[in-house]
Amino acid sequence: MIHDARMVVGFTGAGISTESGIPDFRSPGSPWLSNKPISFELFLRSIEARREAWRRKFVMDDLYRGARPSQGHLGMAALVASGRMPAVITQNIDGLHQASGLSDEQVIELHGNGTFARCLSCGRRHELDWIRSRFEASGDPPACVQCGGVLKSATISFGQSMPEEAMRRARTAMARCDLCLVVGSSLVVYPAAAFPAFAKENGARLVIVNREPTPLDDEADLVIRAEIGPILSVFLS
Ligand code: NAD
Image 1: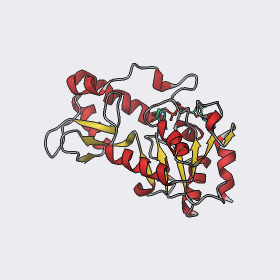
Image 2: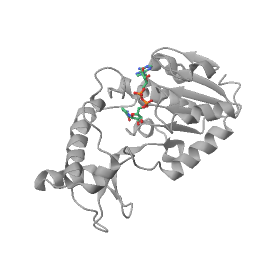
Image 3: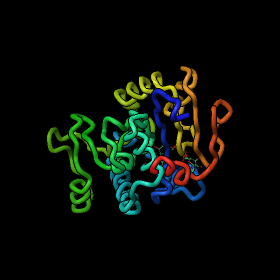
Image 4: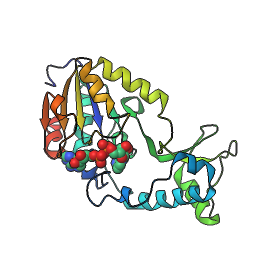
């Protein structure tokens, strides 16, 4: 199907990073479900919520600091390098597609990126190490160096609007592709999960690689219910 395709677009979820050592969201024992999420509204309203968000963030960062791209990420990067797949749309926030060699133009991040922070007022980028050293020294997260605004990890929180530019790019890519390759997503988190169905409605073939069933399996042209690494590593040879 990939050889027959004019344009492949990838769509990845947390499952592609489990072989890098980062647990997915829904599988049993998930650390992401052990705390009640801090909504965007609460983050804005409460300094204590912001302190708690940064405490949690740095604990998670310490756990997954050494994560490296999996065979799945490398397989997707090989497909991009082959010229068959111009972009990967991802729900992931771990930056591992970029670490596998893809440029920011080749990765469309629907839920942002947790490897740096931005000012919520002026958008200026801030590095996490800088924020962490000040937070640990004073007990309070620092303000934006440019405008004094609130800094937040550059991810999309519950209740925060989806990033317009990424949503526009994802819609265009899904409308143009004739093969959508979904890897490691339960396809239940909306609006992101609507994109593969949108591609299918627009005439693309749909392939799903996931170890568990998804709500879109019945619509798919091919479902590969297996571990991601061994499947995607075929693109490495
Ligand atoms: P999900 O946890 O809902 O689904 C992941 C799917 O991948 C599951 O169905 C699981 O069975 C499957 N899976 C896991 N490891 C696999 C493997 N090695 N081989 C085959 N299948 C495997 O993830 P989602 O659909 O991406 O939605 C969860 C949300 O959580 C997303 O919004 C995402 O941003 C966020 N999240 C991101 C990360 C990350 O960046 N690495 C980690 C956890 C959660």
